[in-house]
Image (cartoon, rainbow, N blue to C red; front, side, top):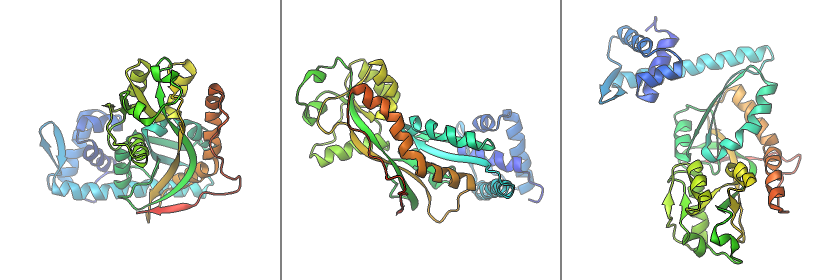
Length: 331
């Protein structure tokens, strides 16, 4: 094992992650034969098979599982060493590995742009998925930080609330309910309410809202993406429950509108978190501090045009200027 290279270890880790040599090659920006060669060489060094083909996928053998676990640790230590050396020279560098639920992908650019402009040596690795996918990535330590609504109960995390954000029932501006003076949840549920799949943050939020109001969570349609929901709602196929952040362009273009009912939008929390008891790279800690200090102001600025467009006076709550959100430990 003394002659194994970092490239060989990276090949094994990525093949294990993607269960595919071709997808691992894409991630490494090399050819598929190059990855296959790295794996064969590593197996020769180890003296034992590390992978096996199952159908169209590549899976690890028991020896491969052991090797991949240590390979991930070695590669992570190498990256941390680089960060520490850069810090000694007064430079914030390294790879910012962050995961965010789909709803938050519209929120991230206003935070990532100023952070990276001030720190040009920082590289970015952003993963976007539904809540279950992001929780799994955090558990496998594929990401250092996660942004989502509610901290997961299945993991021990240090989580901090950094902003409030609105979620709303939306409709086409010409939907019949837009003209109704008093809209109830019964009206909403009878109008083909389209929601995200199980495991998504918006699905969890609307289920909680209905449960608290004493309504069964029986939805008209289940759709796997915010974009698909927005297109079907704008076409008049039903209603949607989405983050306001995800609908900004559609509101401005007149394709979607907030359903005029009481307590709509509803406000929820954004949290940024990392695994408890797990040290995170300096670049991740710096971004976490940046988000906690500036997140609410950035969210408020992003939503000002939305509330102005709708002629509303209500705005998201602003955290006191000198109050720093406290971390909570989620189990």
